[in-house]
Length: 162
Image (tube, rainbow, N blue to C red):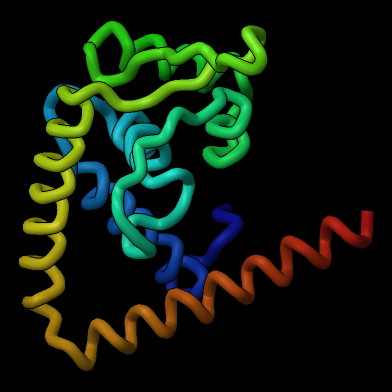
């Protein structure tokens, strides 16, 4: 017997989120890089801030800061950085004040790739959102924020109980 009855709201929500996840997977920013690599380039390019909060900074970012911002382990982020470095999209930069600290920044090729990938993703998302209409989009965003807050509260409560 299933842990979630098929007619329940829980099952309907789970199914809808799973369909969104699968559709989101098809929204590849670039053929050259994965979505995780794309997110890494975005994080570095914007100094860890959301892209809508300002211009691209592309200041060298220490690997430890990058790992923290992406909620990744240092070895995991280091592997991703190495792959992006081999592709020519990132470069390691030595810290003149502390040679033990390694930082990374986008190369000109990385900046160009990121710009093109962002334009592709924006174009696809804008087309999808346009079909919904403004009112439905506003409702969707409101409800997603509401659901996220509820899930974060529950998760936070469970963590505090332990």
